[in-house]
Image (cartoon, rainbow, N blue to C red):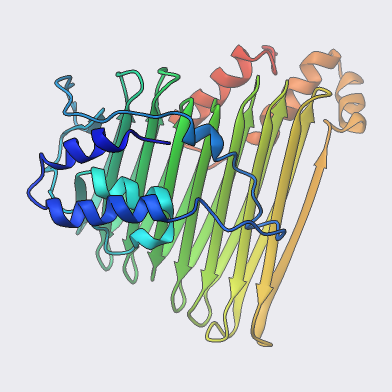
Length: 378
């Protein structure tokens, strides 16, 4: 099992709202990880057995850290913001996933309200072995406000799990920039955003023995979403990212890119689903997926899906491709003085990086690609 049940029950006894948390714990026990289907967006890509065999513990941790102007979650301790004894999230219901129910049952709630202009940096880490570290985050961006949100889940402990439930409610005329980064052996994240304004999102995952990340955006009237989901898999990583955008309001707009790099024995999946519902007249959506495979044993899947339920759309398109680094581009660069390794490095880095990537993500991508010897200095 993913967590020792008696350990979870003992941990719940530390909270005031014990009854509701016990119900959520029981719900998590009864729910399946997922219903298996052959559809690319709901297919069984995550190896849930990797989580189930962990048998983790949770207990009050005495180790704390300095928040230094950020929100810091270390094990179960939260610094830099008030931690609320509230086992719910206003946008995400526990029935939505087994691990959502488990995370809500055992986590404290962080609520951040943005009323003007605010930068929010959330760092989530674990220092205990065989530890389950959950967090429940709710961010509300008021009408006309500007929010720059970064969440980083990072750990070097290869036997513990970082689990997060994150919701964003972006009101009309607001602008929200959201960056999610995971760099941990075991990670689970379930995220949902409701947008009435403009939402720019980046989801990135790497270095996971098993990483499952889900992110859903619900678009209301005349709202906009530009999103990018990408992953770098090395060694024997298993990474599954699923992003969805649901057009509910008229004249809503979305533009999404899915990217992945798989090398060594890694298995990397980046999939997305863009749906335009009956109420979303005159909306526009695009979702494009591409992947590079490096090495004979690496596997990569990109699966952009499109579902249009109305005859009145401005644009609706999707495409996907999986390939090795294009030989014609390598040849082009070699003719301009680069050797093959340098040419590959330029193409791979140019493929995975984007102009709007924040500096923290650029540095992490550079580090992962260099340490894995995927790129060399040019």
